Length: 159
Image 1 (cartoon, rainbow, N blue to C red):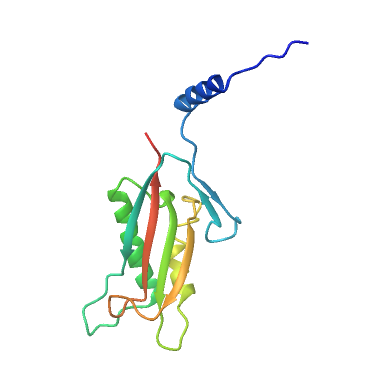
Image 2 (tube, rainbow, N blue to C red):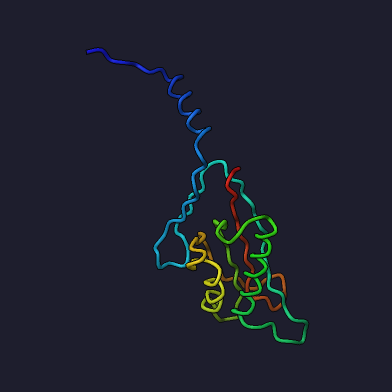
């Protein structure tokens, strides 16, 4: 029986030809269907990565009350949506998010209030992609009265 040998150079050439003609793989958001976040987001090579600075809520002028967490979160997620749109992106392109939440001294952050707004933008039937996410309680934020600040990382599929 005769064995055919293929050189490494031939295999490499075939792989490069295949890769050049193949379409870029899609981002994979992996996690439990009932979870609000992805436990893993796998971004294939070649995607552009866009980092967005932390976004604070729009707060009313003093002495007005700064609003509750849900109201502030809606302000933040609405601003993030506009920032994404300005870059030709949507919430579906967000792969990672960090939420910093402040709480009055001795109290816990209002996670439920934040989630009411977050759930309108991520993991919906219209936009099922969920980013990986960390939510951290902090003592204070840069803006007096702000209850949360959110930074996101998004990716763009290569053309």
